[in-house]
Structures are given as C-alpha cells and as structure tokens.
Image (cartoon, rainbow, N blue to C red; front, top):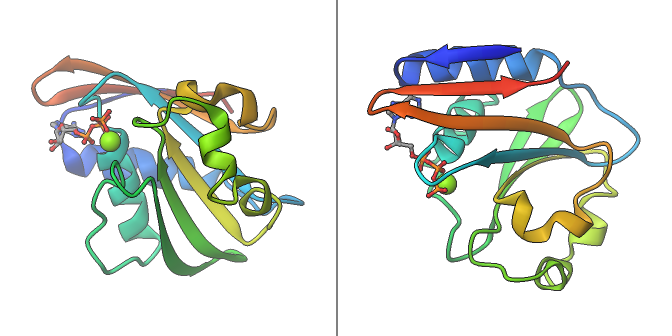
Length: 144
Ligand SMILES: Nc1ncnc2c1ncn2[C@@H]1O[C@H](COP(=O)(O)OP(=O)(O)OP(=O)(O)O)[C@@H](O)[C@H]1O
Ligand SMILES: [Mg+2]
C-alpha cells in the first residue's frame, strides 16, 4: 500500500488502515519504521497509540530508547515504542531485553531506526517506509 498524507489526521487514518492488518502471531509483532529524520515515524506511532487507547502523551523515546504503554487491543497488552536512533549496535538493544520482548505475543513493538540494529530485527517484521515530500506531506508505504 502506498499513501500520501497531507496532515496528521490523514496519518492517523493510514495508521488505522495499517492496524487493520495487524493480528496476533506466535510471538511479538514487530513493526520496523524506516525513513529519514522528520519523515513522521514518531507521529505515526503517536496516532497509532491514540487508536489503541493510549491516553498519555507519547514522547519520542530517543534518549530512553524504549517506552512501554499498556493497551488492551486484539490480544495485545503492551505497545512498545523503541527508538534506535542513538544506538550504534544491535547488542545495545539486547541489553534492554529485546530477546524477551520479541518472544511475547502480547507485545506490539514499533521500532524507529531499525537500520541501526538491522541484524536483530526479526525476518517476519512488518516494514513501513516514510518519506518527507514537503512540509506537510509525507509518503507512507507498507506491503500487505
Ligand atoms: N502529514 C504529516 N504526517 C505526519 N507528520 C507530519 C505531517 N505533516 C507534518 N508533520 C510533522 O512532521 C514532523 C514529523 O516528525 P516525527 O518526529 O514524527 O519524525 P520522525 O520520523 O520520528 O523523525 P526522527 O527520525 O527524528 O525520529 C512532526 O512535527 C509532524 O507534526
Ligand atoms: Mg522519531
């Protein structure tokens, strides 16, 4: 699927369409969000969080690397937002328990900058590609 978003509300609608494709699998559900700085990875995650019932404000976890939000949606109990921007190697993510996180089928994991930890992103991860078109326009693509 390829979408053009002209504002946050449209990005929310695209997040909704993506979430419609998500289902519990036999392990954590990993979504790798790829795209340059400012292309809308965090914005997409925040809109997805609202749809999933997260009421706290979701700040980008750039410095803390990981944030966990409680959800209760289609068998998922945790929305885990990871920002690997500051990570230099995959082992740094292993230190925060990545191996366990991706085993648990109640976890829906959205990870920004998966390129930085490419070797430990599971084969079956879903990939969403973001592109900055102009100030308010973003391209959002995923396969399904
Ligand atoms: N159509 C749109 N969809 C999403 N965000 C948009 C759109 N138009 C403008 N924006 C703005 O673009 C910015 C996107 O920033 P965001 O932090 O989501 O990018 P990012 O990909 O997470 O960057 P980083 O790599 O630095 O983490 C936000 O300030 C948002 O308000
Ligand atoms: Mg971000």
